[in-house]
Image 1 (cartoon, rainbow, N blue to C red):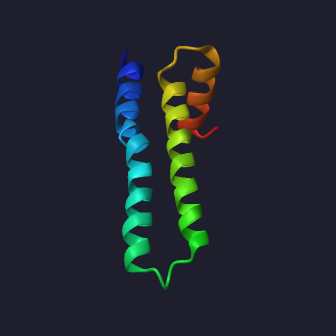
Image 2 (cartoon, rainbow, N blue to C red; image 1 turned 45 degrees about the horizontal axis):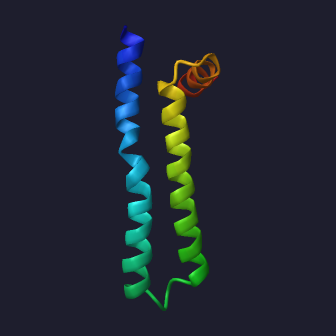
Length: 84
């Protein structure tokens, strides 16, 4: 039971990052490009937008693997949480 509570707390903590990462990328790209147009290259803006969406996708896959009762997901979760 304690393991399930820990997984629920971890899942809840990481769920907020799934929509937040693209939002932060949007704010960086929108506001950063307007204010720092001379300092930020277009390549940096493109990389930031791609990486924030990719990070959001990776968080969603990881949260799904934690909350899924599949045997492969439990093995992946134990390895990622314990570091072994």
